[in-house]
Length: 136
Image 1 (cartoon, helix red, strand yellow):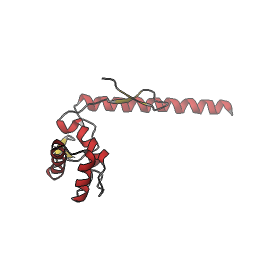
Image 2: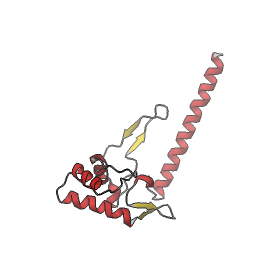
Image 3: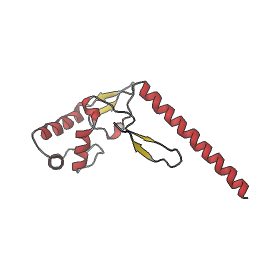
Image 4: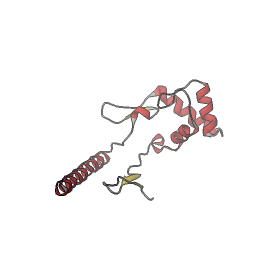
């Protein structure tokens, strides 16, 4: 029985390694093709175009511009979130209430200035699935 468990465990570990390598290959291929990994469902101001690239959604882009303009006038992310909630503007997730952390994530997301930093984090070990930050 222990031999069977040991064999099954080895097969499962090999399958996990194989899947990990395939995922890494896919991510590297997308990066080589210049396709950033964007969760369009929660990325305010952009939609996925027919070619898979980012296309500006003008309706949502107004909210993004408003956030940046309010920040440049000296308002904090918390205050901006409060204003957006009061104005009835939906969050990127489609919720009614904005949080300062949501506004801050928009303000600090490099994709809004035209950059796409790839491999900011990576999984060092496919077994533990522990993510590590890439040092700059």
